[in-house]
Length: 284
Image 1: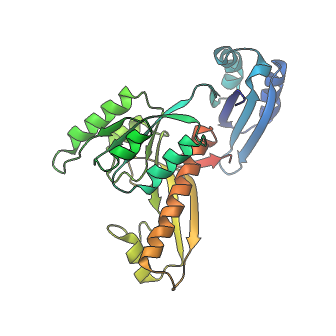
Image 2: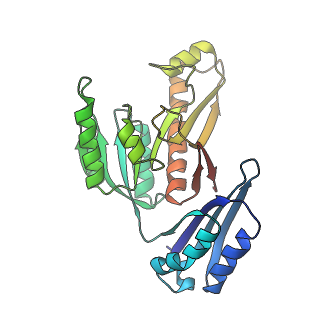
Image 3: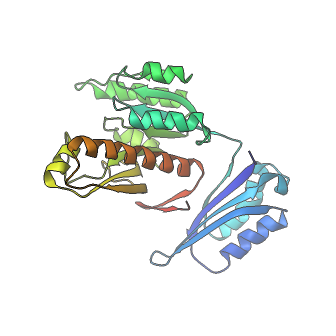
């Protein structure tokens, strides 16, 4: 694979940002292989993502960051420069539904997700064999209804021990505590069906079938303390009709959920998602 540096920027919008950054990269011999920009006219905010061929720059990322820092200060940038050779470490969390986990493991094995899966954490033992067959550590952390604090303290310990850059709730059916949400702000990704808040609770697809819905969807988002209300990364839908049974709706829903989660995670790993308040700019 080619070796790239990725520069992502968010700052107050003003004249000259693109010219200044592009001239800086060109001045260091850098070859820009992909460039994306967006101006939020309502909020007066500018967003940018550049992929730079690392070998064309001829300096390590630390030196390039140091050289770019004065420009970042001048334009009041929130920014990051990442090196694609530094693979992100991902922790997957799952309960009993397998479709999202199986799909991510397949895509990881096939090389579609550029990351290292540090471990899988689950509150059930069901998927140990599947995970360990892939050569990945499986951590079982039961969650007792009367003592969730102990369980999530262990989850946090395992995530820290894994040096995780990102946590993915691949149908993990427990509410994350505020401390973990805050600790992994912008780095914890969740997937859920699109029926919330209309069809909350158990058997949402059966509730939707009884109501005669015509669209099934899924939302991939960053986790915040407010349940299922974090910045949205990706969404998709599947049309249904009166001909479809509740089982059909469940099957369609699983297909949408796993595809949306995989896209959202891939875009996060590729630094394509920039968070602004409770919204995102996604350079997909």
